[in-house]
Structures are given as C-alpha cells and as structure tokens.
Image (cartoon, rainbow, N blue to C red; front, side, top):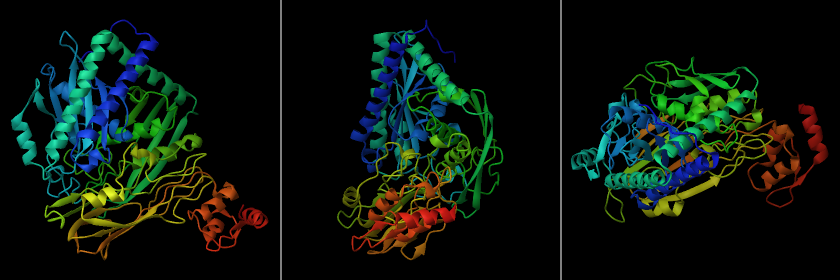
Length: 582
C-alpha cells in the first residue's frame, strides 16, 4: 500500500496535529475505563490506545502499558493488507492472534479505519484491552500448561465486528459462545465504542486540516522521532555490547530459559540481535515476535530523551534480528500466554544490562516478574450465590528498580505504565476474599547507591471454597541491579499448604485458607558502599532496611533500637567499615 503525502507541513501544524492525536488516544482509553463492565478495565485500566497510518505504522499513542502499546502495530498492519480494498467507513475490526502480530490471546485489539472525504484510507484508531478469558481449556486466559496455542483459547487473526456501521450479529454470537465470562461482550462493545469515538475525532481533524496535511504531519512526526533517536545513538560509543538473562523456569519446569542479546552501535543505528537465545523445542516459554518487538522499543525509549515522540520512528533506527525458532520468535502454534510476560520482559532486562556498559546513568530495567497473573474462582460467592472469577488485579508491590538519583518507590514498576492495581476495598467488594496482609518486606530492595524498591508480603484469605492458578518466577534469577547495584530479593508463594514452584493449577483452598505471596524487591543502582549513610538511617527508620542489613549491605553502622526510638549513625565506625571492605 502506498502512502500519499502532499507538500511538506510546517512544524507548528505537525506538532498540533500530533498532540491532538495523543489527546484522542487518551480519550479513547478513558472511554473504556468509564464504560467497560469488568474490573480489569474499569478499575485496573489495562487498555492501550494508539493511532496508526493507512499502512499500520504507529503515528501516536498516549496512556497505557508501554510494551503493549508498541505491539499494537503488527495486527493492524496485517488487517490493512488482508482487507486491502475492502475497508469502509463505519467498519470496526478485531484481532488477537499472537501469530498475526499480537502478543497473547487475552490482549484483544479493536480498531476502526478512518477515511477522507474522497473515501481514501488515512488512519486507524486502535484500542487494545486485556480480557479475562479466551475460551481455552483453562479459565482465565492463562493456560500455562498448554502444549499449543489452540489449548489457550480462540484465535482471531482479524474479523469485521462492525460492517459499514452495522454490528455483525453472527460474529458477536460466535465470540460470546467462546468465552466464559458474562461481561466479555460488554467489554468488547466498550472497545468498539472507543474505536468509533477515535474514528470520529480523527475524521474531524482530517476535515479541519485536510487529508494531505494530516498525512504530512504523520510523516513529519515519524521523521522527527527518527532524527532525534538517531542523534542519541550517534553519541554512544561504537561497539558490541552483550548480556545474558534467564527465567527460572517455564510453567512445565524446564529451567533457565535463556535470553541473549548483542547490541551493536554503528554510527546512528543499532543492530539488536537475539541470536543465542533459547531454542529448546520442548519449552513452554515463548514470546511472539510482536511482543518481543514491543519490549525492545519500550526499553530503548526509556534510555533516551523522554520528549521524543513514541512512534514508528524508533523502529526505523534499529535492525532487529530475532532468529525464528528461538524463545523470542516461536514457530506458529507454540503456547504463548505466559511467554508474553516471561521471557517477554526479560528482553528489557537484557537490553538494560547490555546498555549499562556504556550509558549506565540512563539504564533502569523496564520489567516485572509477575510469572502470570493469578486466577481465583469458585462456584458461588456466599453473598450472592453467583459464580465468581478473580483475575488477580490487586496491588502486587514488587520489582521496582532504582535508577540513578532515585530509589525504587511505590508499588508498580515503571513498565506497568498507567496500570492501576485495585485496592483491598475494591477487591473485597467484588470477590469473596479478605486481604489479611499487604506490607513492605524489610531488606527486600536490592542494595545500591540508590536502593531498589521493597517487595511486599501479600496474604489473601478466601471466604468460600476457591480454586487457584499461579505461576511464579524470580526465585533464582531475580530482578537485576545496574551499575554495581545488587539484585532484588526472590519471590515465594504458597497456596494453602502447597508451595508454588514454578506453577500450580486448580489448587483448592477451603474457607479460611490463605494464599501467601512474598513479592521480591527491585534491583539497586550503583555501589551500595556509596549510599549516603543518612539515607540508610532513614531507610532503617522507615523499616525498609534493618539495622543488620544496614551494616551487611551498605557498610553503615547504626546504634540504638528502632523499638526504643534511639537509632543513631556511628559515622566513625561506618567509615572504618567501608574502608575495610574497599
């Protein structure tokens, strides 16, 4: 498909149009949060809005989860080719297939084409949301024991959900019949409404400025990102920088899933090559090419000027090499539900560690260690008598990395973007559980000149018999430190009396039994012996670090007792302790 571009656009007009598109993305995402029926969307905000040009190139984005927004392009690109000449005003399409550009089946992309007055395709408005079920062999969309993609759920490479403004009842019926959750169609229609809203707003922009000017503005914005990212790369020393990271195991227990990256800086371009990553055919940890591609750009974007527009221009600056058959570009048919997370996010870890050799000041892994989101379900909520399904959308509080100048803080890693995890009050209102604990764990943040964020102790008690699925990682290969910072602490989880390592499915908790999860801390940044002793004392007061941990991890000697409120720095002893270690 050829992109039609008119005469060049001035910088001010191009920037105004780009800003308008970003605002439309925000409005689309907000529309879903206000109209969706299930908590994963109307509370947790797991939705991502983007605008793409007629060929599926990323033109603009706004709020969302970085790597998921950046993976929205390939499904739209496939649809543009598949329906070439057969797209019309009023159409709305849907896609979720990992092997036609997507990440995993729960992430459903709904998008609408946008035309000018002559009927020429100009843009797409896209809204991608995570859904709570995919119709596979296991409820919840995360069949971590699946042997193939078909066991995980129903694949939609691309469907027309709305044809020239008329909802296709046959498609809606088919999708309703292949999903366990009663709110699925309501959430889907929320996405359709958001895509239609985006299409209307973009049509208004085309009417105001003209299609040629809008196309030229998109070209300018993509070119601007390319120029500015290239300039950043050109300032880096040429060379090859490599890193290796590992996932503890896949859900089936195959250990040490290996991600290797070699980053070549050549002038103002990058070659990012994952040759050497795991190729064992029997593993069940697979990240699709689209998912890997999104994680690559999400990590690279965090290393450079944050004001550079996040669009197709980033992709223009890199030669991405992901060998077919490796764990980051699987053969079609491999299961990918948990692989979107692991080894998907380990791509970010690997790039951060490789680039920390030359620009450590900018490196902070854009990753998390979820394993896969927990699912808990039962036949009857005792308050209503109705079956329930909890997608594990509450606060997890772990794996928050430090960056140069900033300790890890808060409950969500930067890679979660604007994802909001539900409060205890919301969770207890929706599901028959009681949250008995949610506290930071002392000495869990990776020591560093800037400390990693603490992990947390999470305890959930069930009020009715409840089944649990859980897959965990970060038990041996923990969240990495940067520039001499130490790694965070490991995760540990028990479901009733069953210790999870690495995965369980359908474990029954009886009324009053508990799920107990100790989330690991984030990696530190820089040498812990360079941390300001006063900052260490403050951490002890706040119970982020113990008196013993202050000396063990930071070489800081603290006297007195927290219980008696008599803590004090011994600066002379601290200086001697640190000198001896050096």
